[in-house]
Figure 1 (spheres, rainbow, N blue to C red):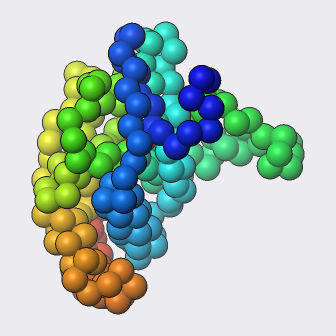
Figure 2 (figure 1 turned 30 degrees about the vertical axis):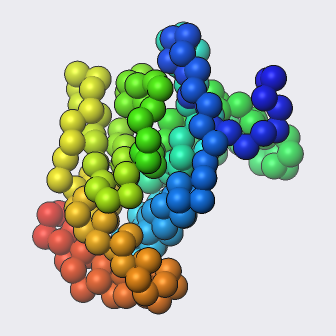
Length: 202
């Protein structure tokens, strides 16, 4: 509350509070990942709704954070929102409390410098199924296991794309421009990724 409207992202874990002010490189990586997720979901026909840097809280565990970016990628979210807004009230009357919403399916973290708090532990407490962590060169895709901890996996459980493929397209956005590269990404998804998803029975 004391920070007011200053542009910082907050994370807290049992008494440790981190303030992070995003810089241009951070926002550039975030923007390209955001674009990639939306292109993937559109081409793969996956439900997608982004909630940006919403503050998610686990009050009883004294943990919470603002993701760099986050998304709902399953139809369950829309069913829950229908219950929240069953009376079809105008947007201004809907709940703005994140505790009234389900946790996102995918969270994205831009890791350009070490964090002062254990962010995976916070996400695990929140119950976020999948987290992508990008440091500008490599991407780690982590899935939440039954034991309540994350394990790195080769590809996304929601979008079927491999970590190294994500990095390839992100880096190429730099060399050829976002719009032109997004067009080529769509072509690759139709030629390669959709067939892979069908072969897996997804």
